[in-house]
Amino acid sequence: MRWPWSRSRPEPGLSADSARDAELRLVKVAYASNLPEAELIQGLLRQERIPSMVMRNGAFDIPDYIAAGGRDILVPVSQADRARELLA
Image 1 (cartoon, helix red, strand yellow):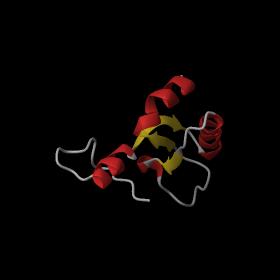
Image 2 (spheres, one colour):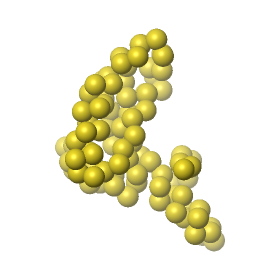
Image 3 (cartoon, helix red, strand yellow):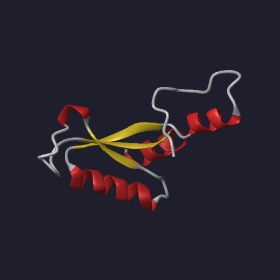
């Protein structure tokens, strides 16, 4: 599966596949201080059947610190409002 990070919405005249890809775009809904906290947030989202992905924060991408460092929690744009309400 391909996640198009750069497009915010489909442009007029795009094919159905391109429009579907834009709908699958991920957005950041939360920040976690470390990996265990990110997994806790991801578990809360999973209980509500909201798919999510955890990514290392760009400011702290040092592989030697395996569980340390900030993480961004990303969900599909179609689930973002529901995820933010749940995590509020």
